[in-house]
Amino acid sequence: MSEDALDMTEGAGIMIDFTNVEDVSFEVLPKGVYSAIIVGCEFKHSSKGNPMWAMQMDVRDGDYEGRKLFFHVTFSEAALPFAKKTLANIAPDLLETQFSPDDPEVVARFQNMEVNAKVSVGTYNNEPSNSVEELTLAEGTNFG
Image (cartoon, rainbow, N blue to C red):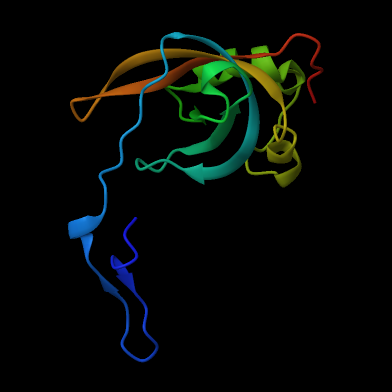
């Protein structure tokens, strides 16, 4: 980024000049299964108002180490079968009892969980985009 793009001179407010700022671009990951670690899980609501977990993962190794992946577990009536499938893969004990998806202890259990993320390639706004299709526990990882 050009040093001239952002001016925060005291008393002058903030001035931004995008004329010398490079466009952001990145290569999509090829379709495949990637070893990842969940570095963030947050309870929030989707744009349609549905409760969900928004998970952020870092790819752990290979050519794409450090790349970010995103996954949502949505708790709407229509999405419950998909949420159940995901939980069967990464937290099967949650299928045996009632729980609240906004319980901080439930949300925190996913932090630093090692997973395999099945990634596909599609399009979003006419641009190539990755989508995480499925999460499974990494071999040797215990749930909960």
